[in-house]
Length: 239
Image (tube, rainbow, N blue to C red):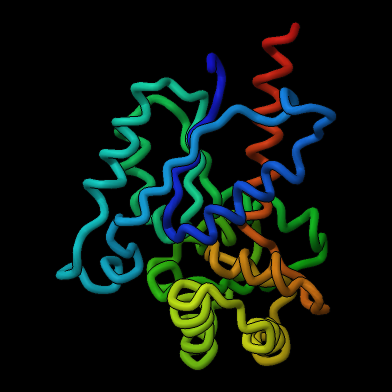
């Protein structure tokens, strides 16, 4: 392959599978050769990002994340896709390790909010405790003129159960729990839209989309941007 991109996944593996499935489903195709060229790195043994963010005595994933960037940069992909929201806490160190661009999922997700809800003012954020604590999304939200709204400890606890106990541990999406979390963000926190800032939440949205709440699904948005960029690279080759 002369032109391709690399997906840095495995954080978690079911969410990575969901992302790749979205890529393939949404790519315009009529034959095998129309699909995108890409590599998937399912590095599932990387230490938990949220655990380290919350407690620096826990195993540090930085060296492995940066190591993957250095290793796969040698293959010279056109760009990298990082499918874990919490891993963007380490984005600066990762991007500093390569001249190859790494798409920034939180930034891309926030930039898309205006297309989903042009009148939005209060933007809720759901994700792992690490993502919420470090405010990975907050500055991008503020820069776009919105007010960031974090979940209450009770909503965050329910979100943590959905991510870690239901999806990561059991491979199961608790539809009622997921929908109730979104309901609480709208009814209790009075948000105009909620960012799904964890790929496990994106998996929940894929499997249980039948709800009335407005969401900005970061993984879904990243998939669309990935296809757009990859197709543009492909079109340049055909000129």
